[in-house]
Image 1: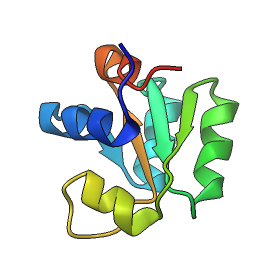
Image 2 (image 1 turned 180 degrees about the vertical axis):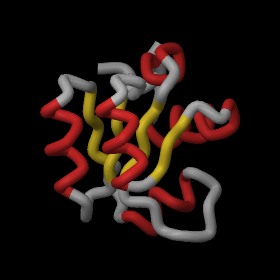
Image 3 (image 1 turned 90 degrees about the horizontal axis):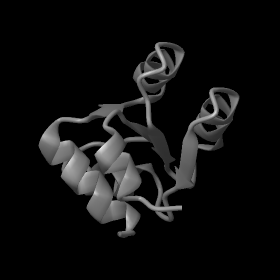
Image 4 (image 1 turned 60 degrees about the vertical axis):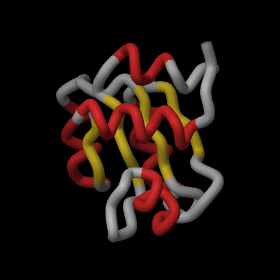
Length: 93
């Protein structure tokens, strides 16, 4: 079952199965723990990291402020790595 990106992010955040921020996501990718990466429309570098690691990548239609809000945070978030297979599968293809 496919769901919208925002809904999948909210579920993953509620489960604690996310890593936020470029440096943290990069470390998560290096450790091969990321199952999917969602990056804000104004953060193209994040997509580059995830492609290098062969991880599913999704572009969030909003900017980093909107992605932060989708994560329930009062600050901007440029990239989010989802570390749980079931949460990543909610994003669909």
